[in-house]
Image: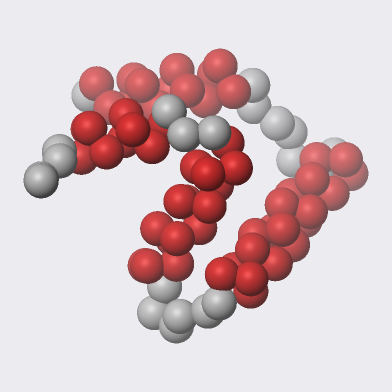
Length: 79
């Protein structure tokens, strides 16, 4: 049974956060040239998240409210 991209996106967005994260890891891993284990990918994502969090805490970068980010994305999708 074929599904459109929009249907798949809608279904994916209804998943609980943990399942969405797992799906995102698998999708990103499918784009990688070198295949790494899911555990290694998870470790790399956690390291990246910790690095970004530290940058926020140190004032190196400033956060953008999610509402603003999603509004910008919606505008881009409309254009």
